[in-house]
Image (spheres, rainbow, N blue to C red):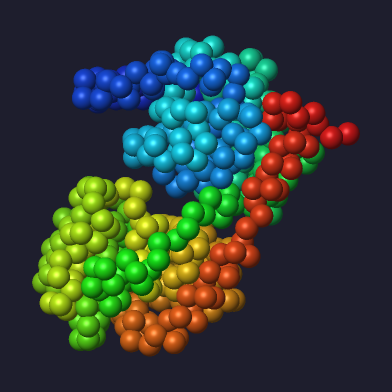
Length: 433
């Protein structure tokens, strides 16, 4: 183990040396972020000391953690959330409303930075969402005798291959960790990394357990803005721009006020390509700020079809809740699929491509219920979307089916808490005999 950690630290050191100019620039431009990444989390709510440290990488994992944060708060466990991406850090208010006492950038996986957080927070447990395996964080938590559990844990074949060279360095610590896996396949891969059966359970995906506030009254909000039908293209990847444009072109002759909302997965990377592809098809508007009503920038529905390009983070679910149909990206491009559940839980018919490896359970549930529709190309996407927008009874039936499928996917939060209690991971919870 020691040799593996030495090699890991050397690799980290080499990476830091190469990236030093970038890190220096980032420290100058974003001093608060880099201070947190060095483990300086002050000022911190005094109640956070002795609480539960929850770590999530990005916006999606953070939202998956939301229901868990609320459950921990209700148990008096005082959760503190760390995140990896700046986009997730900007959602601090949402995470605090869910139950987090505070939200901070995760420390870089360097021993002094991790130790600084552990000394400041003195967490009673460390809960890690999905596949955020950081060797130094695990080693330092072990030295501090802090229980560690991976929850809603995923491990793809690709990740397993990437981690195998470090198995010797990870095995000792991972044998002490507990894993609440999303699926049987994930559990088998975690077992291959050295997790003992007694510390491994299949509990489901916490992304299906987010707190569900009341959905906006779709017709009331729509009628206020004047739009007859709304379709959303969510989490669109750069490789899907042409397919989205083809689908929008197929809907141009539909009558009435039709709003097509396009939300790129990475607004900064693909927004310009979307502008070029969509501007010739219909009046193009943009929402670049979360301020004001959702449809304030959509334009005049009396002019017919319009396209709204979404440049904000954290509003996609709200737009799904207004929609009559939704395409979820990352499924025509070969990246494994993005969050089908988020659209389905809003009672929206879900269109998706064939690349759904990371959301296969949701895709299968939607297919069984009749609330999901597989498309293989931009042409098929256009045909299916146009048919849904033109046929209100079929659209309503598919919407009900999608919502029913989402409801049947629940149960992960209860199962996860039961596993954590059985293992004695949470404060004040003794392991079952």
